Image (tube, rainbow, N blue to C red; front, side, top):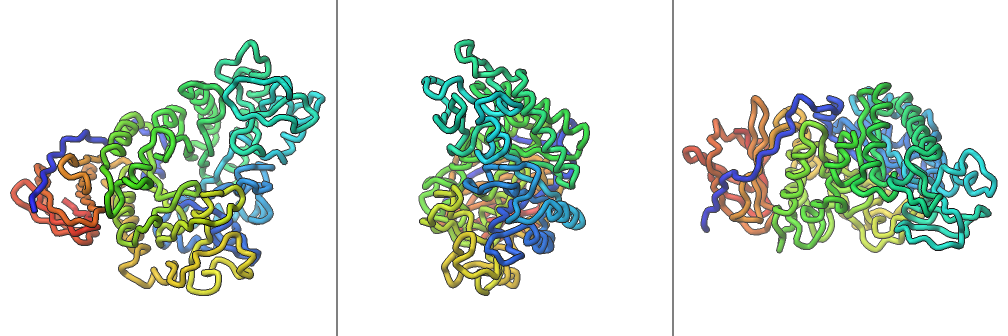
Length: 542
C-alpha cells in the first residue's frame, strides 16, 4: 500500500478576530435541537410537552449540552407541526402553559443551559386572528398585515404562490409554503407601479408588521428566552434580488432588539452565511438548500460520509471555506447532525461506527455544533410513515425519543395508538438507557467529544481551521485546529477501505491520542505517518 502525502496547501480559515460581535456564550456553545412533540411526554397524552423537556434537562446537562433550540411551541392548528402560528404570545395547550415555558427557562439557566425558541416570522396560520381580520372586505388595521392582490380574479405574472377565492375580500393572498400559511407583509423590494397591491418596505403595513415582530421577540426575551432560531429568515421582503432589503430589515430589527438584550442570539434558517451574517445573525446553517454543501457531506449517494462508493469532500470544503471567509470575525456557521426537515444521519445503512466518524467531524469542526434530538444515540430515519402534521417525507425524522427499554421507549405512558408518531419498531432499537451503560456506545462517544471540545479552546467556535490537502486521496480527510496555546490533528476515514497517509510539515511537539479508533500514528522527523483502518477516526494533541 502506498503512502499519500498531505502538504497543507488549502487555505487556512480562522474565526479568531477581536471584531467578533456575537454573544460570548456562543463561542463555547453546543446546541441540542428539541422537537417538543416527540421529546418526552410528562402528562401521558401521547404528545411531548414542556414539562417533559424540564424532566430531561439533567440528561442534557450530563451530555454536556449548554444550549437548546426548541421547535415552535406556540398556539397553532398544527397543520405544519407548529410552523403555522395562530398566537405568538401563548404556548400551545398541548405543550403546557406560558408559565411552563418560563419555568423551563429558569430550570435550564440553573444548569447553565441557554434556551432559544423557534420564531416563524414569514407567515402565520390562516387561523390567526390577524389573518381572519385581513380577510374582511372592509378596511381595518390588519388589512395590510398580509399580502393581498387587488382582485381575486385577475391573473398576475409575479412568481409567488397565490390562493384565490378564500374569503369575502376581493383579492388573492400570497402563501409562503402550504396554502394555510399566508405570508406576512414586509413589502416588496421594488414594487411594481402597475400592481398597486405591492407595497414598499417603508409603507405603513410593512412597518407595522416589523414593529409587531420586535414586540414578539421582546415578550419572550423578557420572560427568559436567550434568543431565536428564525424560520425562513431570508423570505420576508418579496421580489428581493440578493435579499438586499431583507438584510436591511434584519439589521434594523437586530439593532433595536439588542439595545434591550445585548446577549441574545439570533440564528438564521437562511442557508447563505454571507448574506445572513451581514444581516446581523450570529449563526447560519450549512443546509441542503442555499449555497449548499450539506448534501455533498451527508445526504446523497456519493456524499463523503459513505462507507462504500462515497465521494470527495472537495465540493463541501470549497463552499464552506468561501462562506467562512465572508463570516470571519462577524458570525458563526453550523453544520447540524440533522434537523426536523432532513434525514437523520442513521439512514441508508449507516452503523454506529459510521456515526462515530461523523460526530468526530461535527464536534471538532469550527462554528457551533447542533445535535438533533436522538442523533446522539443513533436513532434511525424511518421511511414510509404516513405524513403527520405536514411532515410528508420528513415524518421519518420526527419519531419519539427513545429513552428506555420499556413500553413506548420511555417517551410516554399513553397507549401505543395514542403516540404522536409510532416508535422505531425494531426490538434492538437504540435507547439512552442502554447506551449510558456501554462505554463504547455512540452516546458516550458524543459525550467525550463534547467534553473535549468544551475544555479545548482550539476546538471551539473560533479556533483556527487548517484543512490538510485531500487531492491525493479523497476518501479520507485530515485537518488541524489551533488556538494560541494548543493544537489538535483530526484524521477521518469514513471509507470501508484501510489506507495510510503521511502528513508533512506539521512539526508536532508530541502526538498524544485523545479520542481514537482504528488509527495508529507515528512521528517521523517533522512529519506524521498514519495508518487508518476502514471507518476510523483519530484526534491527537500536538
